[in-house]
Length: 458
Image (cartoon, rainbow, N blue to C red; front, side, top):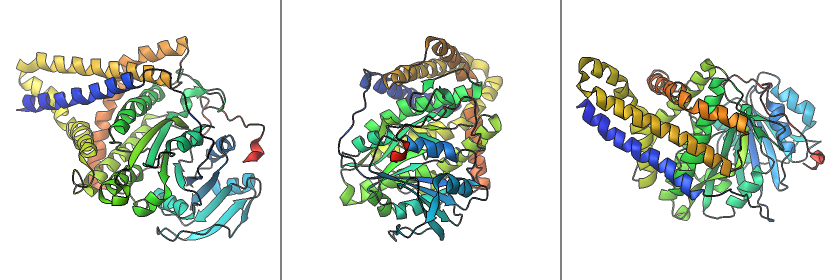
């Protein structure tokens, strides 16, 4: 019985792996060039910040390099008890203001003060009572003055042309939400204006670089084509402000990014005003984010991700297929839930089953071999597609990357089993608790900031 279940699940696995390999490989057939429109839509960038004193200036200086004009920045200090607020006050010359008025559409925690930068007129800061990331995002949305709302983590640095790419995508009136490309900051050297990929890093960072590139360049690219994006990464997403109002903003949960993505899908299927709307992935809209540099921090991050996934399974359980559409529900149920979570538990029983009954030993070896082959091939395709989007490694670093891929497949990738099992059990133990990742902020591999000469044009 276990063998039959395993074979059926394996067929589903092969289907999804081939889909993620073949579509990006042939759809992105040549080097992709970003287009830029002369007419700029208004964009509000919301940056929730809670105890971000080590990295907040990196985010701030990245904003200085934005090659865009019609935008505003809203930092939301969510009750930080470190020097985050003091640092921003010092470097922005913040003064109290009454210019910002709320839309009064989404509830949030009490506002203490609203500040406006004397040095950079496009930057505001909202100081509020702590309410969590979802509450901070709702606060920023309430006070956003522009049509498009971009959410950005405080440890993320925007590429100078990121908002141009978002502007081009949202020229399509049917796009109501989109995810940007999130790159690992430690994986680049040089300045923010000319970042160069590097692979001379610790193994645990290398693992995350490969994982992120695969998740975005293969998985999200394919899911976007099929209108089935499961999650717009919380580190960097873009939404039409009206759509956020129409879904009543972010829900207070351990995984607000997946939750808001599924809400957008449900809005499309249940509101006639959004009947032709869709979600997109914008590979040219890039931000650089800091990843965990130790196993313990990675473990805590992935446990939170798994708890967020399980939370959405239960919260949206009555919406699948009926209110979320067939394709999105198919990807969520069969790939993410069945293969990504439920399948992990019988996999862990296979070694025990082989010890008890060794008759199926060769079948297990065959399945394992095919799995390894597909995983390696998928990573190679990731490199190829990445090059078409401008992520080009030097020969020296490319050799390191190619050698690392098979090693990563049989070592680091197996950690995912631990994360899924532990995260699932911990959800039922305490679904609302989650750990804030430790900020490094001064990694020797992080891309340094180079400010443009016209920095005060912000």
